[in-house]
Structures are given as C-alpha cells and as structure tokens.
Length: 71
Image 1: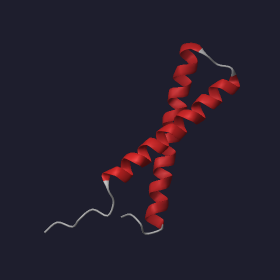
Image 2: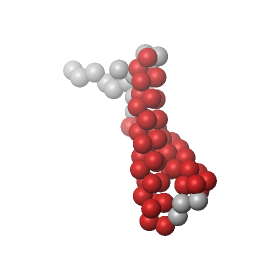
Image 3: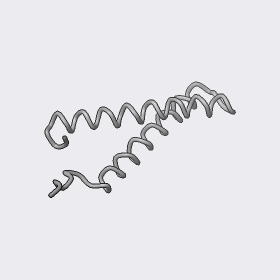
Image 4: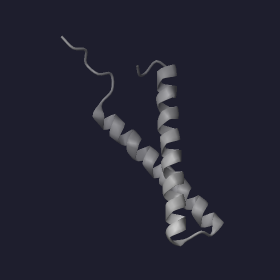
C-alpha cells in the first residue's frame, strides 16, 4: 500500500501563488524605482520576478525540509 503524501496540493498551490505574487511585486517595485518602462521594463520585470519567485520557492522548500515538515 502506498504511503499517503505529507502535504496537499492545496498547500502547494498557495505556496506557488505566494511566491509568484512576491516575485511579481518585487520585480514591479524594482522596475518602477529604476524608471524603466516599455518592452525592456517588462522583460526585466519578468526575469527578476521569475528569479525571486524561484528563490523563494527553493528557500521555503529547504526550510521545510530542515524543520522536518517535508521530505
């Protein structure tokens, strides 16, 4: 009999949404503060947002593993 997962899809979706919103907001603030707009601003915001969101997701997963809440 397979083991039941220790987390849920709902918690993962909430985590993905949180990381995406945080990454998008930080990218928007960076581009706004630098005064960059147009296509270049959108490109920079997309790249920065993805990097921040990925870093948050990886950091959160590492923290949960270190605390023993996730395998």
